Length: 160
View 1 (cartoon, rainbow, N blue to C red):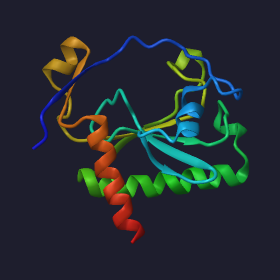
View 2 (view 1 turned 90 degrees about the vertical axis):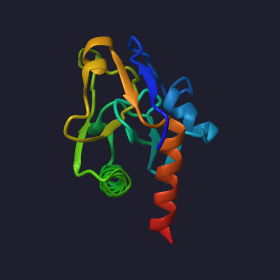
View 3 (view 1 turned 120 degrees about the horizontal axis):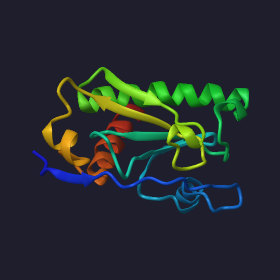
View 4 (view 1 turned 135 degrees about the vertical axis):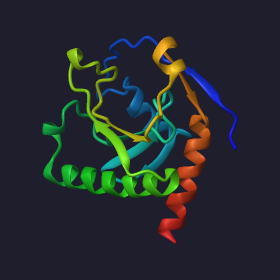
């Protein structure tokens, strides 16, 4: 069993990104950051460093865009193909068929980074409790690096 990790939810502020390399997500991709669990020529996925639940990942287009309507047809098709692939991986690894999936588009939505990203969050009945409801803190059974390791192992098994 993994030790429990407490993640205090940080105060989020808007962090503009742009195509000139100042975007956090573009930088992760450029650096081939440890948090990347999947990438191809059109999309990539990272573990969320401030997860709501174990297995919380983000899916992003490689090209810097802010809105899904900016994606080309090929990018859109690949985005949703990979989303379904990652749902299968998460379902297998975390033994759940329940997920929150969504975009935050624009300032009023709570978007913190201006690079389109889809949150995929595994859910279970009763996965929120007293600590989460009263202290803006989430008790997790694994760290983001442990999440990455589990998902990379499952992805490699599927590719075999």
